[in-house]
Length: 243
Image (cartoon, rainbow, N blue to C red; front, side, top):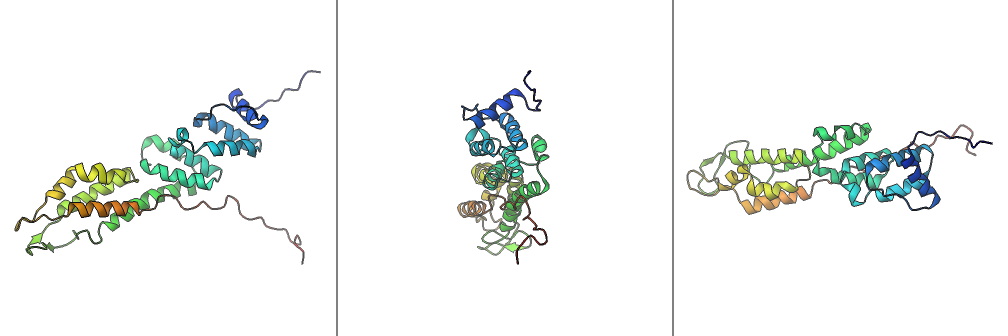
């Protein structure tokens, strides 16, 4: 009798990796999303939690963390909460509006996408609001020099705040704001050299300002909120529970 032919959609490389995991044989190198994603999809299709658990343990290794957005998409797809939250933190180095990320973002569900954008936006807007509070100067109205009482225009601080927020918009991690940003940006240099036109007093305390900005950035949220349960609780049929 001729052996029965079973037709599958997966390619040989994907099936080999999957079957090796099931049989306890040495598994192939799983250091690329192009290798891992087909195996995960096949394991999900054939209801094979064992291979999925192996892949889950490997996705947080350095080769795969280099593409945090792809890790975030995969973690959200399979409701891996810890991995999704960790991946969201690593995405803070990315500009989500960059065209190169569009294809990956399109794979996200609505909640996962909104949660990630909310994290990035919350960091930017929280810092924006904090820069208007003490000990930072108020640049929205007429203010006077604390030394001589002359009117002072804090336009250099206003321009520096704008540059800071634009940097946070493109890289929400904020690590480049203090260094090199506040040391090298033209707007920062103009701010630190600004003086009162009447008494020649320096308007801004560079050391204090940089320290407080760093503290503000360190206090910003770093991950998305915990993921909701993947499925609603089961509904028992009428009469299914004993009185």
